[in-house]
Amino acid sequence: MKLIKISLLAATLVASSAFAIDNVKVSGNAMLFYGTNDGFDTGFNSDKDASLFGKDYSWGQTSLGLGVTADLTEGVSSGVHLTAISAMGLTNIVSGVFEGGLTDEYWFDEAWLAGTYGKTTAKVGRMTLDTPLAFTETWSVAYNTFEAGVLINEDIPDTTLVAAYIGESNNGNAMGQWGTGQYAGVTADWDGSQNTTFGLVNGGKGAYTIGAVNNSWTPLTVQGWFYNLPSAATAYWVQGDLALDMGLSVGAQVAGIDANVATGDSSNIAYAGKVGYEMKDTFAVSVAGSQIGENDNGIGAGFNVFGAQSKLYTEAWWNFTYVARPDTTTVNVTATTPEELTYVALGVYATQATVGDNGGAATEVDMSEVTLEVAKSFGPLDAGLYYIFTDAEDQNNGDAYGSAQVYLTYNF
Image (tube, rainbow, N blue to C red; front, side, top):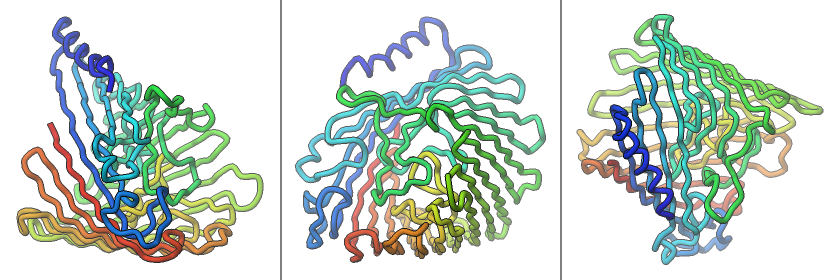
């Protein structure tokens, strides 16, 4: 890691003192992630006799995130965030990483300026986003961000209106193109050895979205979003979530897309629903289901246009990209207990995705996943241990396999 990169953050702090900038906040985290398979490794080798913890079938990485936010003047704020990733000494026990390559990489994944007037806020620059079909995925050692302009208004009681233009992103997947790899594909815009990978959205035409979130009746939150990628596709997302005092919750989602294709089906739609029950400080359980329509061009629905995950209730814990494929029926069952009850947080996440012809694909791609979680917070340190059972017809020659993962995150 070059000291000049770190010094830019230090310079921000010095400047804030010199010009009497107020409310300067510095935060960050350090991560150590490790994973290993007892089946084939997704991209490193193809030996079906692999065992857990073997170097050739394991991956790991560390990351450091440093962020600074500050109020520049009344109603105007700014923020910058630096991420650095490194395999460090893990190369002695792993052959792959979560993001990028085995070399050290570092980049500014956030650099934004925001202004507020009344109940309206405008934000421009490089930033995280959280909308149903364009969002930042935070499951890896680094996260994808966007170069965008966002306008938020709250003049209507209990309603938030959002409009955004997205010009660039460092996403891993193109719209509608699915890979079996499990990594987010987040890479730096410059790491000293590679070309820029923070690329234009939609061939430079960008993407536009407008949305509204309403909570006029406290137990019910309703949201609706529309997306336009000029000359490429339009999409929408409608969702309602009802949470009752008795611990019962119900949710429904509908997402659709209409892509610009030369022949055949151009549109698809996804439906999802969820029922859950939570007893405070005791346990929570939910059952969700989703159905994606058929499409002979392989166009799915409900996916993150700029990443790998989906915000459908049925999304798997680890094996992303399945639930939003065309002609797919998915069921997800989740059960968790908090640390207050069992000293450590426990979780079971089970997903069964039954994929049809996947837009005419020749291979079957049904996927079953069961993830077991044991997690604990030690003050600023979050620790998680996971075992993932995967049985997918397009992985490991169709044979089931297991993965163990360890996540350590120190927040400061």
